[in-house]
Image 1: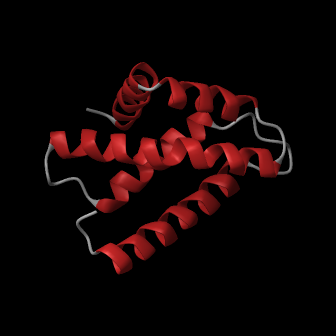
Image 2: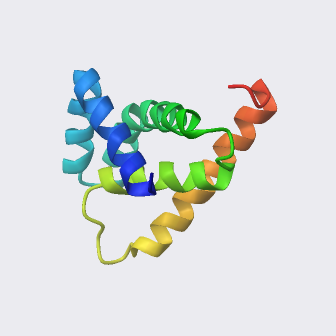
Length: 115
């Protein structure tokens, strides 16, 4: 299964199973402004991470953390509103990737690797 398929499967499952997620995803896509995006992203990203992790575990344990990071990043990027001219996609991807790395490192430090 390819990255896009895994991400689409996770997003579809979340939209079908959770009206709250579906509403938050629509709200995120329509958000304007940095703080509005941050506020709404907090409702969308945790369930997305959990769903992608569940889908990846079903594929097998050989999926590396870097691939999981790329899957989550792909899902987040697909939910974001159109980027302004001053925020190129490569820069947003780099910054979001760094944020994901920091969040995972902190969770691993606090909870171990079994969260």
